[in-house]
Length: 274
Image (cartoon, rainbow, N blue to C red; front, side, top):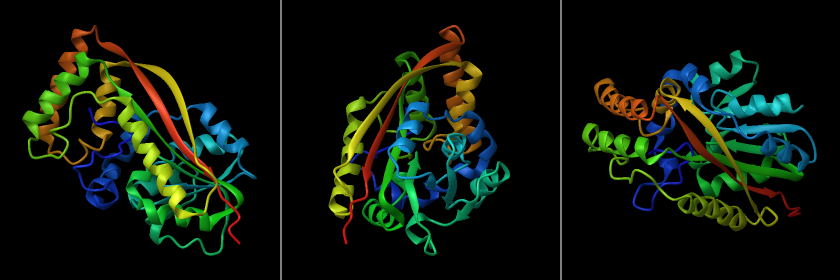
């Protein structure tokens, strides 16, 4: 099952090079914003409490899901987003956004107390991203990279995987197992920490974890699935076949199921490198 947080398996190209997929989510920005889950309040509180102030830069802000949570916590948030469609949606909901890839974005002398990346850091060059984040952070400013990992019940995940293989055998996602262990994603966030260390710009990174659950009806799950990376670029006929298989699977469970989520974060404070 394609996850909301997606450190790529070793045999696939690095995510930050997959620009067509990275910029495919804006095709239906309204659905994306409506269906994607927010982040744990405890994570937002911890980032804000561990930063020297409330000026936040949201890297790859998308439609502004995380940014609005930080705004609600009293922060002034600026978004940077490469997809103009996602940026326009976020602006319409009160978030100032500049359209650019983070690596190429010009901060124009501005500095921030926190740099966040919610479900987006895998689209950023991992080496250049850490250095750029350090450049725009104030002393003791915090970099926080986080995202969701989820595993639907096997009764839902396995029919999805089988239908995906039938519908899109050429896709790099088609040979992935129906369910993948959390340890794989913990390893991905550990690799992010390694890149942050290698930049020489931060204190020792920390790993945070937040476990929670959410109940989904069949229609709620079918609304979310087309917003995930493995499905955004499929043809309508391919997508319809996959969604039909998932529809039948969820109906067999009584029309709803409970999803277990884990939100992982790698975070580090900027070191004084003068």
